[in-house]
Length: 265
Image (cartoon, rainbow, N blue to C red; front, side, top):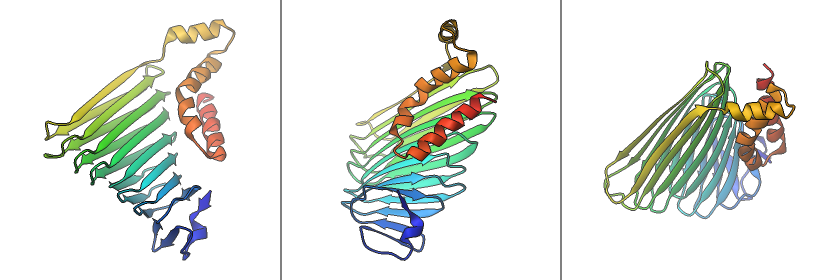
């Protein structure tokens, strides 16, 4: 793990931090930890990994053609991110604490791509995720997958808009939102929108929202588990794919402890 404080005023080793702008010009294998507002530029031919744990920040990201960025965010709050992508952008976010977040991605060069996976668990809290994806070049690809679990007066909104501009043929824009509501006083809402000005494209969206199966819960309880233990086991099955993708052990441990705390309320 690389902390930004170690990079202040330093150049070399493929990265530098000057005037709140982090520039990467070759492949960096270690994750770089972001804890505050930042501009990030990944130059052509470089690749990088970011772990974002910031709060109340504006993050500006530029990914040049031939560059790639793997971006993980954990429990960031009230964040605005803008991504100007001419290369490859992959983002995975896990959010467990109340937040309003905005994400805008512009795909600017042919073959540019963006993949976003989001998991949120809302308990006695409200979440809003505003996502805007714009295809401004031919043969660009975006894939947005949102997953939300709401319980104990939790409320989640996924507001996702994908736009393919006229002339941007052979592009692909996919949106998918899934929600599980674990009681009668919680909610998950999905607002998928596609704005398509070109015929020769692939564009689709889907949303699936429902309650956790009572039959599965009763089955687990019949095997000797308490209701709380059954809930935790079923939730484990939902979130495990996201946990397994986290590369930082400290973040993994924080995530698992927060889930246990929520279910014990």
